[in-house]
Amino acid sequence: MSFFHKIKEEEKINLFLGDFIGGITGYPTRTELSKILTKEMKDNVKSYVKKTNSLFHVSQIYLDGVVGSKATLSGKLKSFFEYKKTKNDLYSVILDSNIVDTIITTNFDTSLEDFYSDRITKFNPYFEIEKNETDEKMAYYKLFGDFDNLDKVCVSKQDFRKLKVLPFYAEYWKAIENQMRKNSTVFLGVDLDDPDFIEVLSVMCNKENLNNLYMVTSSSVVSPTVIETLNNFKIKLLTYNETEFLKGMKAMFENQQDETKQSEVVLKKKALSVTSDVDNKFNGKVETALEVKYSSLKLDKILIKYSNIFSGINFEDVTTLGVTDIEYKNIRIKGCYLKVLTSNSMKILEIKSREFKIGIQVEHSPGGGISPVGSGLYYEIFENLNNTRLLWVINLFIDIFSGIELTFKSKKIKGSVKTENRIELLKFKTILETVEKLIGDYPKEKISELKNNFYTFQLFEYFKKNESIETWMNLDLENQFEINPGDVLDFRRSYKVDIDNSTYNFVEKIQLLDSITENEIKGNRIKAYRKLCKITFE
Image 1 (cartoon, helix red, strand yellow):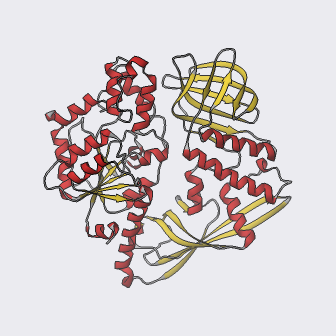
Image 2: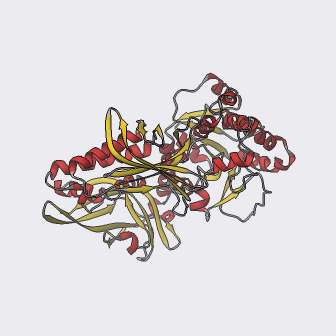
Image 3: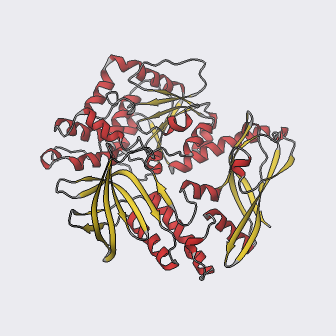
């Protein structure tokens, strides 16, 4: 019997979330934060670091070595999270699954609070628990607190020691213990090589009469020490891809609910004609799997412009470094303009040429140079590039986000910088695939001047080949058409593509293959996730 069949019998589960969703979203992991702090230390202090993947250990060395105060340390860590506000739909999967009762995490990011505050009740160990018994929101235990108050956050070994033993925190741990007795607990996407997590595990699981404990990880290699720890606490190890596990869990419960209602459903059919501005027309969202791919990568037009830096941040100081050449892989980019933008929380190195610009968060290294730090990033591809230069810039960004080193030398500064980002790498590989296809089909067209978005171009390819697609889609619409359980919906969206001196008009027809269920009608809205559908064109 598979794990998903076993948890059909569970009424609710506790979900302990590691930092894998944060990693996907672009937040630094605890291990990455440890490396950043270690790089700041002088060699005589750095020699005391024995566990480079333990944020508790590295933070304690940072404090003991008087590299900075607790406020300085907390403020530095806060800067990696406070200006990044990115929604990740995996949290929607968890909240909509109807099985998760409680979320527990050691993460510092505020994604759940920022985008789902109406669906969670947060419990911070540094404040007394005031649980309302009639509160129907999902309980969210943030074990280490957050950076709303720099003095009340757990970042060092001494902080965690206090959190474990001081009487003030006993009620908090007791509340979690009660949840673990009441429900089975699933640890998802955690770093089994992180000593901090193993220590947290020892505090949480060293109790009597706990319900079932499961550890879900995509890693097929687990150290003997970790296996021994899991065995001691009777934790069952399950090897799954974390993202697919969440989607599988939600799909299993949706199917289970549909099966119980199947005999009661009377199929009807309603057709909704929608235009390409469907999101505005319906006060909601209709999104196919392919659209999700492009929207999750924040891909719109060919000449993309992106920034994850808070728009309200004020860069008080701008230092011009002059014009210089940038070198990488024996290639020279001539005449690049360099400057450093400084605010009270970050520094950005901007490299600008005639064809693009990119800004990378950096810090001054002890030798007087510049080294990358944090996740601050922006870039832009400029207009009027011919096809050859457009391809060259796209491939340059692929190299940059693969971690290639860019070196530079001006009268004011010399050094190198690199930034590795797997999400941006995937984005630019997707851009390259689309642009190469367009250039191949329309060699005389200046691709950089095309106005349609990536999704429209992909649909246009299916339309030209008269192909149909069987896929899935997400719905979140206002129920203004009196949709009822059992209704099967059709959608029509119109598109226009101007290319190769011709105008093409076509219609995307989306037909749901499954009827709307009672569970997907939430008040005056229709909310359905990964609903099977078929797309045809005319």
